[in-house]
Image (cartoon, rainbow over all chains, first blue to last red; front, side, top):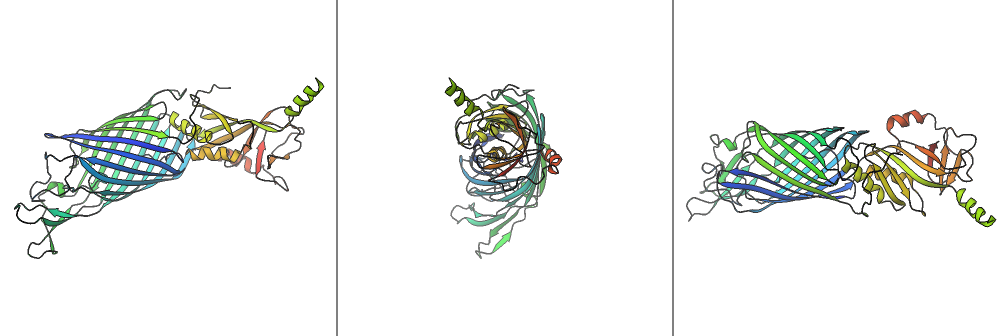
Length: 306
Length: 160
């Protein structure tokens, strides 16, 4: 989850992260690389490219009345798409060893995969837009961050393979619902107790609560007799296409080595209801580093008091 | 020997910044401090930076030649995403006199100036919203006076 703080101006950040879970006999994985740049002290932009074995490029045969969701099916690992994100910090209240920040973000994802469940998720499942507000407070060893946003997914326009192979595929439009996201992150710096120099490894423990509420999904297929005329499929008995909401808990640990390289590991569990787009436990691992454009630091950050 | 003493005397009376100290607000981790240090190091007149992580402050050493730009130091802290709690500098007044003086093309207005400026290096504190925490600047706002008339370059309010 992104905090309200932004990347320093002129600094490039690179983040690689991966999410994995077991889906019956299949091991599902999403891996991504993200480039982040501080355009101004208050504006950070990011671009993320990711791949996964979550989806096919087409919806499954007989969608949505059968094979929805397409559980335990092998999908080859493929490039999903790209996500663009911008964050603007509009409020900073700084104290010694504390700060309160607020930021607005906007996001756009372009994906090339077919998402057979209803819940919209940018970067992984659906293309579309997102926006929201982030609020972060840090004091001493304690951190809290709240992120509230919306996802406005784009429709999927593709086709379903007809179960009669001799027949042409059936043009299909899937209208994913809008969603509201709400995330709360609580963190605590375990070590060091007192900062002395940059070489001390920072160890933080955190708990993230990630939630989402979304509406029902509409599926329309083209009339075989009258191509171009679409009719709505009744999806009332398909749980993954109904409106839903959930909250997950993601306990995690974060290490920052030599005040730059950041490694975080978390495991996600359902807390209230569950998400249909992944199984649990959901393992997430990330590595991040900043690259500065100027000459290397020569000190260790350990100036003695004078 | 007399010539040598005269030469030494010339260098000791030349006005100059010897170092700067900046206190930074908003820092909550060593990576934050490192970001500030790297931002300040980009400045061409900066030779070295020593950060005190525990007290969230840094000491800045300058290259021998070139103009020291105090505003750019404050901007470097903001570029890193933080704010200045205080900005002080070690300054040798040299032959400078009076509560208004110019140095490297800029004007300095000393608030509550003593009758005689120090003969040796002294620490000056910069007054302004860019160089202090808001609550500290509020205390000084009504004491700034009219500044210096006929100012040259930027106008800085300072105090000893």
